[in-house]
Structures are given as C-alpha cells and as structure tokens.
Length: 363
Image (cartoon, rainbow, N blue to C red; front, side):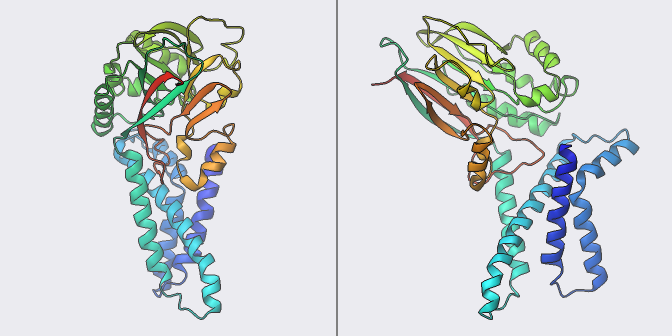
C-alpha cells in the first residue's frame, strides 16, 4: 500500500512539473513530449525497479550507486515540484502587475537543483557532534556527571565499500568522544542479515567503559528483527529489546532499559537506581510510569527531516520531533538521526548528528 501511495504522489508531482515547467518551453513539441515521458517514467522508479528485478535476476536494487541515483532522482522530483509550485503562486500577483514571467523555468531549475544537492549532501555526510547537557532532579545528590554518546537511525542498506566507510568514520568519531556509555536507538539497518552481516561489523567496534546498548525500531521489524537479534547477540552486542540491565554510568550505578514492542515493560518497576531508557519511538515517553525514568533517548522522526514539516512530524509522534523535552520530571531527547533512509535521502535545516549527552544533577 505504501508503494502505491508513493507512486501516485510521485505521478502527481511529475504531471505538475510537466505542465508548469515543460509547457512554457519554446522547443519542438516532440522534444517536449520526450522530456515529459522521461519525467513521468522517472517518477515511477518504484515500479521500474520492480520490473527490472523481475526480468533480470542478477540486478541488485540495493546496489549503492543505484540507490544513490534513485534517491537523488526522488529528491529532485520533490524539489522541482515544491519550487515550481512556489513560483506559480508568486506568479499570480506578478501577472496582474504585468511583470514578465520568462524567468520562471531557468530560476526554478537553478533553485531546485541547488536545494536538492544541499539536502542530499546533508543526508549522506558523516554527521557532526552535538553536545547536550541534561540536568535531572530525579538523580541522587551524589550522582557524578557522566556522558552518553547516542547514534540513531543509521539505516544501513547497501553492502558497498562507500557506505561501510561512512559507518567506520561514524564509529571512529563516536569512540573519540570517550563517552561513559553509547546508545544506538533503532532503525540501524534496512536489509536482511544475509545481505548486511559484513556491512554492520564496524558497529561492533563501538567502545565505552559502561557498555554499548542497542534497541530496535520499525525497520528492524520489516527486515527480520529475530534474525538481527541473534546476529547481534552472536557478536557480543547488547540488544536490550524489552528488558533492562544494571550497569555503571561513569561512577554511578544505573539501570538501562530498552523498549521495543512492550510499552508496559516498566510498569510496577521499583528501583533504587536511576533508570535510563532507550526507545525508538519518542511517544513512548507518554506510556511509561510518570517520573520513573531519568532520561529517555529516542529517534524515529529524523528531526522532521525538512524543517517546515517538523510541526506535522511532531503531531504524528506525540508532539515530539527533535531535541530535549520535559515530560513531568522525565527528560526526553529525540535524536534527529545519524543516517537517513535511502528512499528519500534529503535533509533541509535538520542536520544529522552524533549526540554527546552530559547527564548531571539539577543544580
């Protein structure tokens, strides 16, 4: 159903681009027709990919360069549609003022291409480190400040050397922070274990004195969560789906919990240790016992991905989209993502990040 809806939306955008941008061009009608056919066909890359895969069994739709190219085509389609629509809205009052509209097609082309290139770069670059300080009144007075590095939404999907190098650099940059703990909060992968088992191995090089903890998200569910759990377990990675473990965060004893499918995990829980929660979905914060969890770290929203759409993404996620929130005395940090889903590799004013959280008592 998702692919049907996506292809219809793409078709609508393509038709609008053809009418708005190709229609006014002063070129031969046959050339216009051929350009329109190309735009319409590219908009249906989902079905074209499926057709090629069906007839050519050696074709790999998860090839790095293919996913990169089709992802860039997708964001070009989106950017051209949005910029063309904006230009057409602006054109209405300009037409009444008898202002020439001959500029529209070249200006739209330049602006849309620049925005697409910028957004694509923001989506695929090795993220910068963002430092965040969290002060909690739920921590005991003798709690010593400690650090947690957080990765989220890596969305590893190809088995190419390029993407593996990106992951290696991300891991190296994370380890250089010397955090007391490291969390990885879901949507780690976007393919099966058989396809990606070698590609994710750099993750097992993450090191922290207090441990490295993983929780799964919706994309693990799509790609075989049980098999991925077994693979991570076999490589000594601590996947804490729907369980908790005791650990030391710096000099402080804590409980680290992970919610994957069971939002009731912490019901009736009583602990003398501060509780820190990993949960892929940020709205989990509204389903857990009040004032039990010191800090919840989540992902899923990609920070809204496109800044003007952040309010809409927040409405779909319990009011949460990016950054630090207070839910009673619980602190929630919604991570904007370290990577991004390759189906739409585009960020606009919502940069990816490796987060370094300093957790301390409220003064």
